[in-house]
Length: 268
Image 1: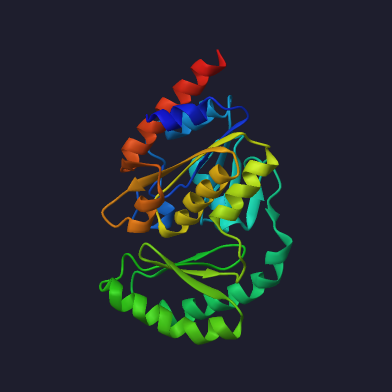
Image 2 (image 1 turned 90 degrees about the horizontal axis):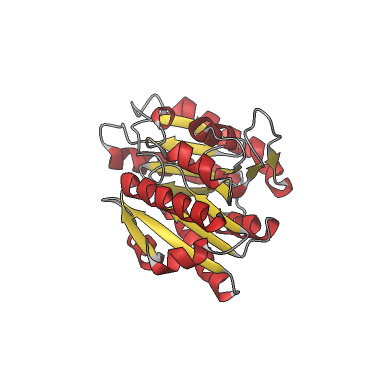
């Protein structure tokens, strides 16, 4: 681990915040097939004894918690629209108030996608969330053609329903037109727990908001460090704004293990 990570880990209260897909879980062919890398869940569990551990994902809270399945963590879903202070089986999922009006328009767009796009694009997967959802076209025979078709079909209805379209890795996101993102969620997490130090790790376009927020937190006097998990298709901006880069999920989980050991020793 770098010296800067070590210095952040010495802070108390400390926060460790992670994306799931491509960060702690290898990218899977379908959303339901995703699994945490071996050992990751136990390291998260151990880390939560000494730090506030958060999961910030584009998945719905219930879906993200299904994959991680560790009690005592803060689960933040749909890029910051949903919050749960533990597993949803034992804690209430909170939808932020400003997102509520967009739940129905989001479902309308997903209904449209299932009616018009699924029959035309074999392999297209519609992933529903409490607000909006994600259309995964990774399994389409021609992914680029699928992307073009999805955007062309949804552009006008999304504008009419006041919803926002964004993109991830082989995916089109249907989002509420709010300024909520992983960076805003990270700031809320830091302020909620009154942290002095925080580390954030992610791998995709939406995680750039988290890395940019790490920079702002540092400017505001917090000890903060951003980690980019590099894959073949990692956006260059993510690497530019990261304080450190690890190559792949296995290396990220190794780093998580080292951080867990370090904060355990610091506590002793």
